[in-house]
Image (tube, rainbow, N blue to C red; front, side):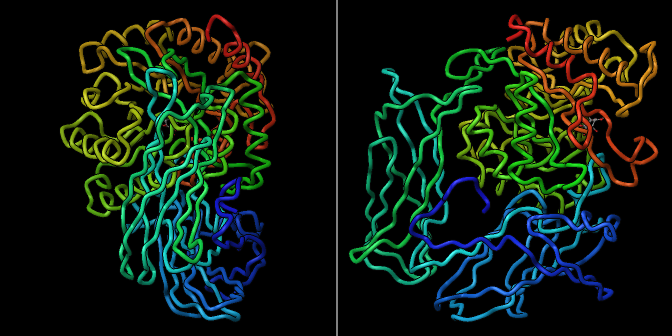
Length: 554
Ligand code: ADA
């Protein structure tokens, strides 16, 4: 299933995860697990291009149905009994395909997947992480009745007496004409109903429901605390649809130079984490995700940055549960200017923004949205691009701060646009300058270039080590000793600096990179992981653990 909890008790859903058949254009066929990526088949480890996944689907009654895909990497066309019924671009957001009046019986579902680079793809380009191919997240089949709850967006505001009001915005969609219908929201022991006189076939309707003065326990860092928001759509003779959202009550505010969580300054002790694993590629199952999170917690982390794309809902569900603060980022890493200026990019990134927020807005773990990691933030064009993207996110979700991770540093002209100033810096690794001096210089510059009176985050800091490479004299770059020493210096300087609201270590685990990056990256991997691609700790694991566990730094 796409989530780690049951989202429906009334709407009938089935998992389409399991064994599918994968066919290549040259006729080769393989049994493939869904979710998964084809690079896990040794013969396909370097396969780039189109492939077709098929499987039979049995429908047990005539019905409108919805096929829900958690993520397919990266360009998809969906066929039902040989007919094209939908498609999508981008591995990191989900999409739905509706099939009206599916008849009872056996059908063929075919998903054409393409992971090739090219003009059509502006977000997936050769990059410092790998573009896998396959149905990388779960797939579900939903049976629908005459009307459905298409989406539910929740946010909470705190009252002076410590209770919360819950604001629930629901989008209803009619598949047939309906008579009078009613939507009921139930949360933390209270419920509220909104009546609708009737909907015409194809009509959508937005409803806002307010549940007031809820007595709840707050969601908090490394604690979590979740509640089920149950929505029911009914008519006189029965229930048409339902939805369950898992929500949390917490406040996030920017107060001058501080980020406040539940009115208290929060210090981010985080990791950048790619969705990648030495054996599983992009498709980590919930068990593997939980193992990653256990390691992060063991090192004393309270935060994760989903570099550089929206993450699997299951991972976000776990962060909700465990109380990890998430910086979620849309899908854009260091894209060249000629791509940023295309209309196709404008369309693909706008879709990504819209899908990311609609699908993830209810996760209490997400405290900030990020855009355009290391893009063109030093030019006038860049300024308008950042402004457009940040404003789109603000319009879609006015409740969370927004930011971007800059590497343009002393040339950046976009700091005026953000709620939180964020820098990716690598002193003592790419830049030969003591970390403390570099930081002081950067922070002083920030004050007079749009960053004054705003919180500052260090969104990346780190150094590389090839696992198992040692230097007893601790001098050789790429040795585990040198990586540990550089991180020690970096974290000491960053955490001692009161002006900085927190840090994300680059990065949690070593990850595979595109072939085009091989000359810059030994092993064709980004080796700055604190654990290797199989999660075996390097020496720096204990350095980070010590730095993050020092109680004075909390
Ligand atoms: C950048 C970038 C990361 C990674 C890192 C590095 O800051 O955001 O994706 O490439 O540098 O390892 O150099």
